[in-house]
Picture (cartoon, rainbow, N blue to C red):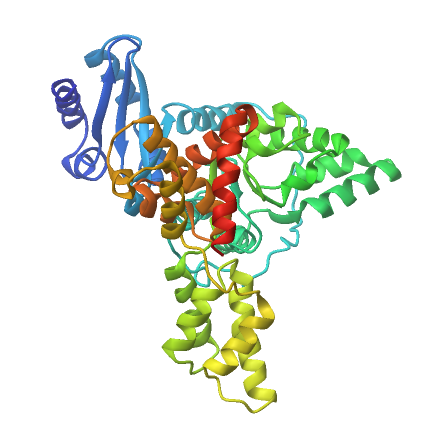
Length: 464
């Protein structure tokens, strides 16, 4: 593969000046070639590289690869999207840039008789306080933030269309999508950006049907360049709204318009949604925003403290970050409450006041469950040594102990899947997600497993 790619580079050097080679071709890394399927995969450092290569050098790259690697070779790009996390997404060559090039050439020779020029701007319904600068980054949201920045710079032209963001309430989904919309609008003021909740979309749809102007409703949404739809789980059970949104979705996607969706669950867990709709939700990128871990909670608190010009001791910050673990709203609410108590009641912000404020926000367990404690209970019940969970062994009882520990840690702690995977077995969040699914499936099909799981769960609950 490397020998063939070196031959390709030789052809490129004969066709292009050296500065272009250094900037656009030397960063490309060939990572795999499968003879059976004739699939070549090239790694590129960013979405911008992929877009530029496709739009500028498509013919040169593909004709050269066809000559060197053989007729019928299919080219794929492995696009780095979060370098720190070693995250990438694969995109087939020709699906983006070359297609857009053909569309542009076609538009030069023929006019679409149904095309209607929209000159008036619209209110994007964005909250301009929700920016990327205000969005604190941590392991639980790093992927989403990196992809969001890329979309804001290149809406509709990345591989992340649609972007489907899911996670529990209060983890920053709405903040992130507003930040994307604000950044995209600031970069391109002519871009028609619209943020809408699914609940409002449903009311607009019902009103349009009642008044007999459903076509106007659909036509308006089909003019949007970047559509942000919050809480799409509210489409569940609403067949008419689903059908209309399906048509709008298809039109926008086919015309290279960006779609961003948020939900409280991943697509596979959405019931009473048409399968064709769920398939489209997964066309681009599905990413999770997890509950903030301890480090991110501290970062959020310290940022809020600095912004509000407060003086709060590290002990108080640590106490709040340790106990307010559920969501970001409660964290920010704790600072607002401390400020109010200090200002209006003339009280010093100390541990005593912090304990009072936190007690009003949440119920603090007398004994807090940790991942380590849950893992110890599971291993003791199954007769497994905790130390072997970190090994690579695939013995059934050890794998089961890992999976149960991850399942209960996700259920009874507010730690992110990344943290759980790291603490239990030195694995990543994907392993945790797989373990949770495996335990849930066994729970539904295996009576003996269900009995064992309930026994362990009772021991965990008694430990609280």
